[in-house]
Length: 149
Image (cartoon, rainbow, N blue to C red; front, side, top):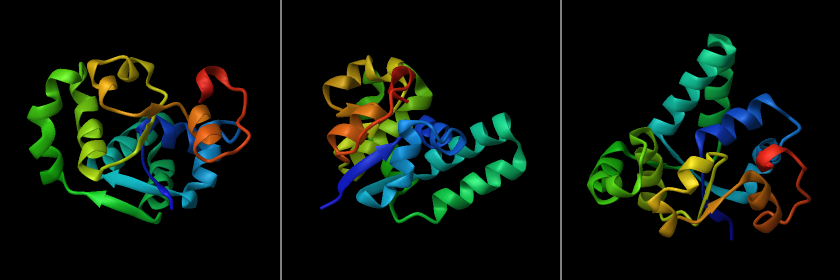
C-alpha cells in the first residue's frame, strides 16, 4: 500500500528544475506514494516557479501537479486546524503545510526546509529529507547531493 505523503513546495520546485536530485527521483516515482495536495501548496509552487523561472514554466509546473493522482485537502480543513498548530510553527507560511499534513493523515512530510524540521512541530510530524525518503520509504538508491535535496 502506498504511503500517504506530503511533499513540500521545495521538493516540487527542486525536483522539477534539477534532474540530478533526490527530489526529482521522488517525482519520477510519484506513483509509488499516496500524494497529498492543497491549494496553498499549488499556489506557493506556482509563485516560486513564476518568480524563479517565468510565467510559462510556472504553467508547466501547474499542469504537472494537477495532473497527478492525489488526495486534495480543502482550505476549510486547513483553517480548522490552524489554531491547534500555530504555536508549534515559527513561520506563518509553513502553517498551511503542517495543517494539510495533519488533515490528510499523512505518514511523511518530505522537505528540504531544515528550519521547519527544527520547530516545535517536529515532535508531531514525521519529517524526511528527499534523500531519506528515497532510501527509507521508496527503497531506492539515492543521490549524494547537498543536504539530500
